[in-house]
Image (cartoon, helix red, strand yellow):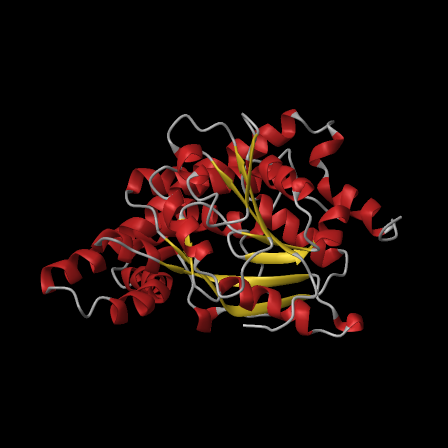
Length: 346
C-alpha cells in the first residue's frame, strides 16, 4: 500500500496446539498487502502438528519459531518481542484470520506521522467469524461492533495491535498474569503517556467459542484474570448486586406483593439484552426461520452463562491475589508509578 517503509515491522504471535487454525493465520499473513519484515512465533510447547505446519510456510514467509515450553501468553509475547528486530511490533493471535490490509492499516499511523506526532500504539479492530448458528449468537452476545466503539477509550486486544518497541521496553506484558494481560499492557502504556490511535480498518476475524462449555471456560478465565489484577471492581460489584440482590428482590416483590414489579424485571432484562439483539437480528436474515429462532433463543442463555462464569472466576482471582499480597510483582500500579519516574531510554 505504501511505497516507502521507513520502519522495520515485526509481527509476533504465540501458539499452543493450534494445528486446526494456524494455517488460516499464516495464509492470511502471506496475503498481506504490506509484507512484514519478519514474523516471530513463540510456541508454548505444542504436542500436536502446530510446529510442523508453521515450518511448512518457511519458504513463503520470513518466519522464526521459538519454542518456550510452559510459557503463558505474556511470557510468549515478551519472548517473541525480545527476539524481534522491528521498531514497530504488530501483535496477533492464533485462531484468527487477518484482512489483507491488516498490517498496512496498523502501520500507516506510524509511517505517516511526523516525529513529534508519533503514536505509541495503533489499535486495530476485530469482528466475529462465525461458522454456525450458535457462533452467530455468540458473536452478537460478546463482541461489540464498530459503531459502538469510542476511539478515545478503546483498549485494543493484542490479537490486533501495533506499538513501538520502545514503548514495550518501558512496559512489557505482565508475565505474572495468564489472562487479561493485554488490558494491563494497554492501561500501562496509556498511563505512561503514549498516544493511542484507532485503526478501524486493521481487521482480524475472530471465531467465537463454539460451545457453552468453551465459552464458560473463557469468561471464567477472563474474570479470574480481573481478580488477579484487581480490575473493574465496580463492574463486578454491579453484577453481584444485580443477580444476588436486585433480581431476587424483584421476583419476591412480584410474587408476594404486586405483580407489576415483574414489569420492572422485564424492563431490566430488555435493556440488558437489547445490544446483542441489535447486533444479531441484521446478521441472521439469511438463515431459515428455525435457525433464526435458535439464534434468538441463545442470546439470554449465553449472557447468563457468561455472567455466571465471571461471578465464579472473579473471587478465585481475588483469592489468588490475597495469597500473594506480599509479592511485589502483582502490585502493577506501583510498578507503573516507578516506570513513570523513569525517563524513556534511561
